[in-house]
Length: 365
Image (cartoon, rainbow, N blue to C red; front, side, top):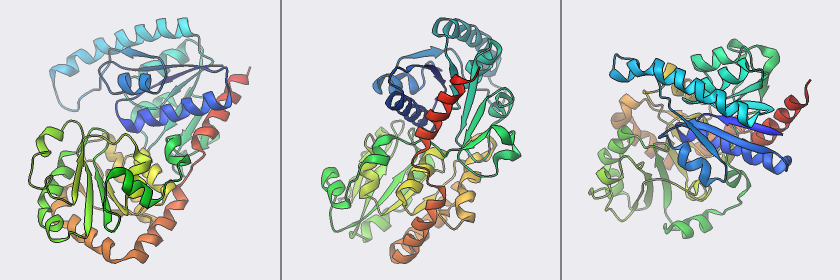
């Protein structure tokens, strides 16, 4: 079986793609996998690190305002489609899977035109315009939220959940072991604040704004992932130098950090939500205001409406985050209840289910 997986741009697209690839290789040993991503994006580093080959397209997104980059967009799109023709003809995949991101559109469009079977893995509760268009020719559409037949043909939908990294699903790590590994105090409650794989300035600024909270509460400790883009801006700040604050640019071992954490404050990306759901971690979700169709707010509201998480808007971070954190620290029973309700969204076997369905697709005449 030959499988081409396309997409990337952020960890929210890349890590589910790698999880699918890992599941395919584990279940079907003879599977050959090739990734297609966007030149200069993080998939060009992360995918080879996971042990898979990748081809890069000269493609980028279309900006919502008039910029010089938009003038280049049609040229890049046509060039990328020409690149995909060559890649697909040489690799000759049995099925092509799009996981979202700049490269996903041209890869699936061209593959479908050339007669190859395609499938889509939609991570969010509100799909983007590209996936809604590509879905018309897809064999199957893997989704992570119920009621997605509002956007896609019901007969094509597989409610698989989002595939998450095997190390997060499989690792059985105690809180004590995780804190020891990370150099954290065993007796302090741990708050994890992270802005996604690239970081989030507004979240980082909120941490700075809460300096008195960290200073006046030495019984709590903060594990703060600032993002590679912002590490140099924050590593030498007064907050970063506090003894109960731990600053990192990027988290390589998410399973270990999750195990050490009592409360998670994070963006509402689909992958992050899937991870905290499987691990039943009480969370305060801060939807990014800089995403298409405001899909992170829709992701977060799906959990809030089910009583499974709290949400604070990005605009109200400095006014509301401290109160929410204090409330959670003082209400363990409420945190436990939220964790239990997260089970409604937990799909730990998503990658395996997707792998099995992709195999079935390749067997169709």
